[in-house]
Length: 211
Image 1 (cartoon, helix red, strand yellow):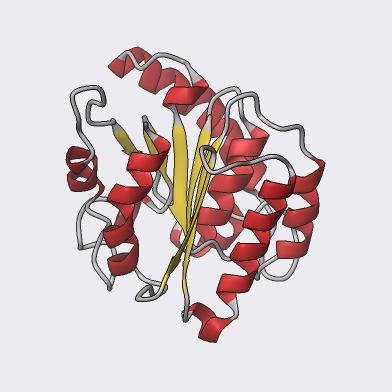
Image 2: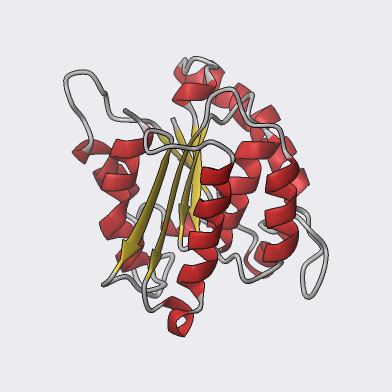
């Protein structure tokens, strides 16, 4: 089970100027004898409200409303998916993901609702926005009993300023005991901050998280 933020970009190309993630195709590419295609649920953002919805702390131009989104995901959405599709309520089977602000939201959601989401897919997370508070918050949270985290970033994103922040988060997680089997950090030498790069990296991220 994979829940992705910024749902307008998850499947088709129409929702984004740079094309969509084509997540349904990525899900089909990771199928093996032991791993069926995951169900992918896309959660649309509220356009002008996106920065409020996907950031956990108030400040700057955000009200920090992510906790309300987390409550929706762990409550109504998880319940409806379980009832409609019969997906077991087992955290190891549930991944939350996103890119940019969605990557920030995914990591926060995993630690805020580990009883639902056992893993996080965080592509090009925008840790430069409110990052210090998020780092301190992650450092203070209990470790989820089951946890697998994927982080990535393009080398040139933000003119080279984004990658060190993502690397620092990977370092923080490693200092808390995350080894290679639970944490994947990918530096993408060709990566840009766009859907084309996230679409290209998505199958590999899913293979790591869903094994």
